[in-house]
Image (cartoon, rainbow, N blue to C red):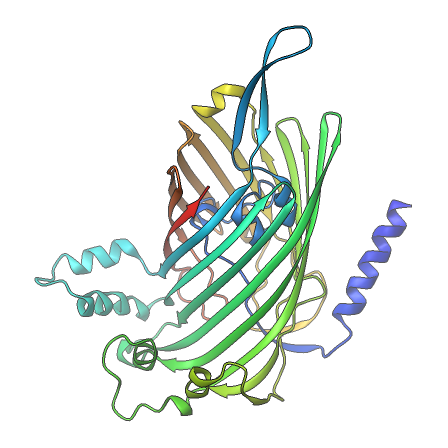
Length: 412
């Protein structure tokens, strides 16, 4: 019976996936450059919890990131300690990140007499001769806990491909706003616990391609407007889509296995043609777009983790290690701009040690590169930072470029 149901679901997903055109342009999946995840090599599906579960695995809505320990007296009069799960409320999370090599940047600035915004930008742009560069900022609010997940998330990503002439740097900008609603249920089956969840993601996105860097700065109000700048001549696409995700996490003692299916049936944005000038006046204005359609391919993530329960000692020392595998495309479709990597490149490994209930030390490995990061929990907030390598799918360089991100959130 289970095999028949599984085959039926795969057939339905495949039918929906192939019900439209067979040639598309790649549209980046909606995500959050979380230092917590990226510091661990991008592996998270088997340990998903808290705010980051909104972008990784909806089964994590029923998984708690922190616990409270309650002492009580049982029926035999013995003192026992109960471990209770806690929900997580993110009032405001802000996350700036940059796709640069911070060590090279520091070395270049060390020989500068007067460091200013201009010299920092110049030093950063000098890295563009060999690899992609970029930056972005993300902000969100949400609640995850007791099976429910809801969030409102905004992302702005700017990626510039390699060039030998930094002054002519041009790149792509993608801005996305998304609401995420989901629910997960945890089944307690004796020593086995199974969490199954799903969510829906209505999204609005704006895409601007091949835009000069000085025009970007002028549009964002950074620096002087370039001579002859005409924002109405900078074309853009704006549109909406609805994404669907599902996931599961199976816990057996200190072991867990996770799976997440993202962008079920492939996510297709319905775009319209517009320009930067028009966007500042009316986000919904635009003309019909009849070009090649964009698509975010459906992806499957599989993971496993070991997280020993050390009881009350976990308040002092709480380790976990996990890995994740992202299989190749589930359905054979022609998507220009997507990158299918080899098996080793699709395996990610991560680890975290939580010390004294407030300090987290993280490390990871992905695609031949190491990553690392730290996290600090305050009474009403959380600070996370990471150094990692990042895959710029549409604009690969000589090597996979480095990235750095910092997140501060009012979270409790």
